[in-house]
Amino acid sequence: MIDETHLQTSFTGTINVSVPTAVNGRYERLERGGYRRYAHEITRHLAAPVHRPPEWLCRGARGRLWEQSALLRATRNEILLSPANSGPLGHPRQVLVLHDLFALQQPEWYAPGAARLQRMTLPRLAGQAAAVIAPSTRVADDICTELGIRARNVHVVHPAVGMPFGPAPSPTVSGIHALTLRRRLRLDEDRRLVFGLVSGVVRKNSAHLLDVLADLAERRPDITVAVAGVHEPARVVLGDVRPGRTTVMDLGELTDADLADVYRMADAFV
Image (cartoon, rainbow, N blue to C red; front, side, top):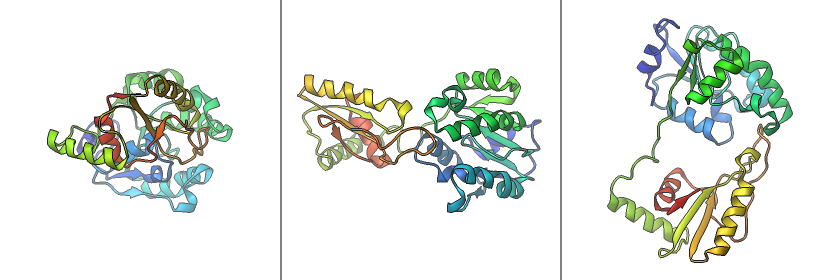
């Protein structure tokens, strides 16, 4: 994880590191997913104030308006970390995290208005940022080639594994958790488990995954085939309530702790 010292010293010479650090907290109003999880994990390790929009100003165009007005005014004299693909245009000391450029590369995956807005703002946002963080070399290359950002301004910082998804505390504790969870979720203790995550988001291809898992369940009745996932419909990306199959066991929405234990107990994970 990045701590505040690393965040500031990594960009010495690019931004004035003597000023306080603030965080763009609009991510807390996003639907559950990778952006929000990443931002939450990073932010909880920073001793920095998180600026959050009010509930009625958090989503869509209104959320962007809040970023361009209230957030910009409140953080103009600070280093602003924007950890979720958006932020205020014209901020003089912004560190922007760009997880991907899918809205530009695959606009058919997104609501038309959201894709248009990203096409209009993302190049300017990245170009004005004091520094851009990418989660992988592939994304960093895309940022440089497709947005025209200088390579020296793009920093690859690979995401870490947050709790509780790290190593199990001990084999004994892990075994107890697994046994308890199997009983609670009604998973047969003597059957192998094949597990997958599914989503209503079109680009996740969950319908095809469920077809494959349903075929496996039919071919191998001695194996438990199960899925889990959030039922919340997406707002920006195209999709609906996540699909299901009658022959594939649906564990519903699991807590992070339960999900980590299911990962550990699964014999295969798709």
